[in-house]
Amino acid sequence: MYHNHHIVPRHMGGSDDPSNLKKVTVEEHAEEHRLLWEKHNLQEDYIAWKALSGQITSEEARIMAVKSANTGRKQSPEHLKKRMEAIAKHRAKHGHSTLGKKLGSCSKERKRKIGEANKGNQYCLGTKRTEESKKKQSEAAKNREILQCPKCGAKMQKASLVRYHGLSGEKCNKSL
Image (cartoon, rainbow, N blue to C red; front, side, top):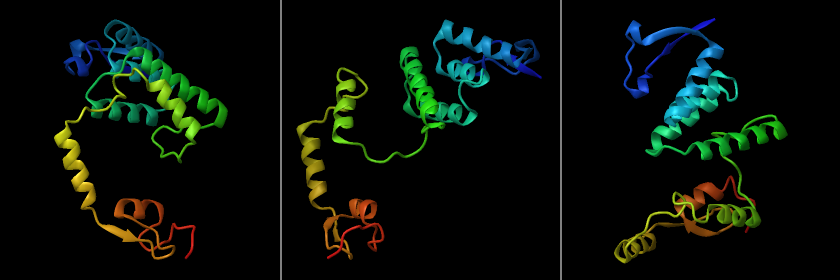
């Protein structure tokens, strides 16, 4: 089976002109993208290389591409490598990947470890807010509607009630 490889990839401004295409095997295509990734450090080539070489599924590649497009920043090759190693380790242990799936809550110890790992990471520090914006946010929170769980009577904001109890109490595991 042969693929058409863009000599100058479309994500770098390359065209579909026949002079910019060459026929390659799947293995050669993966290697072309690996070389482009090593040369330019662009995530598009990294994802293409991993997917074409069978190291990630097409679904994982799609999720990575969407996340990359939505973040507006390129992830470092080191970060991508660590993430892919974590996915491979999880897949080896559990036989599947959790990429794109919602995970349950984690323990306080796990949260502490995540916090420690993220110390000094410029992308995990959050946005600095002015005192004025903090005040506005606080006032908005005070004005949010408070609802009561019909099953256990707990009072909380609507978003929390829906998430933890359900509007009609169907998720609630407590009783009056």
